[in-house]
Image (cartoon, rainbow, N blue to C red; front, side, top):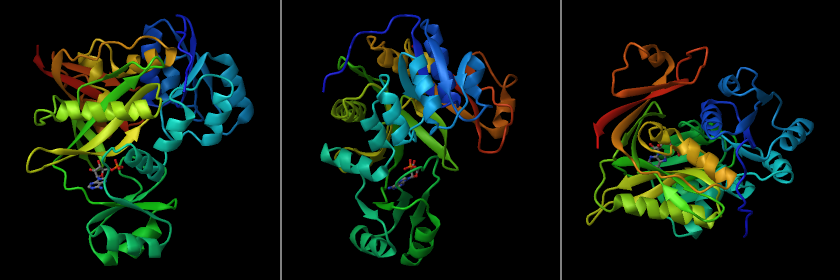
Length: 363
Ligand code: AMP
């Protein structure tokens, strides 16, 4: 596949689908490069609208609004992987869409994603497609228990999945999880979760940030610690797998790759849990300690610019501020800590309100 590699000039208009914190941070990074941004989101109360004068408040299936949006911008990107396929197709027919519709289609469907990864010899948990209860029974026979039953679409932050420990868990879990079809995954006995944010531009340049060690609380990312406490060699291996994925997808933009680190007799092995075709919560630490952060890197790739330097200049821990945690700013912020708040008015429980990047060692 060949892609147009002519860089867009300063002053170009970048269209961003989605008005959450990721869209907001992308918009801020784009502004810093002298770009303008136009954000499309159905929710008039979106945090990203605070940082751009150009916006469209409309549904993701509003064809007229999408066409007008595409006509008003030079390139289009998005902050979430659940962009409907018809929306992506309509936009891609009018303006360059990065990452492309193919990457989006794969990443928004767990089954398509696993099939794709496995076809490129990327290790994934053993899995079976589950459309019916009979499929689930057969999948349990094949994979054993415990196992994790997941929706193929629209799952995030642990929503849309159940751990099955006993056969008797199967029917209720099958009934509860929507939308169907589902996928059953073998339970991976990992001792750590890490992620790599990797970037590729249309010229084929690939650069990745250091792996982050991720800890989840109540299924929501709590901290990302860099460097990850991984054995020598694991870091290079993770970066290599991430590179294989972006090359195979002919990908343009930043991609989050989540891994399970599984202890082994010789050395640990890596299993890809999932990929996210966008900037990633576990890459927010790059803002504080990298010359080029993940948001700028994504914008550079979308613009057809050379990628920036992802090298890390300090050790760092990113902590999400969930719900009332946001009250820790500013009093709980010391001289080694960079706060980033998303400007959300209401601190509901479980809502990502901001994050802090705490420097733990300067080089
Ligand atoms: P996901 O929505 O696929 O990212 O899964 C959310 C979390 O559930 C992961 O970060 C893991 O902690 C856990 N998990 C998901 N799949 C598996 C699996 N196959 N084996 C063990 N733990 C899993």
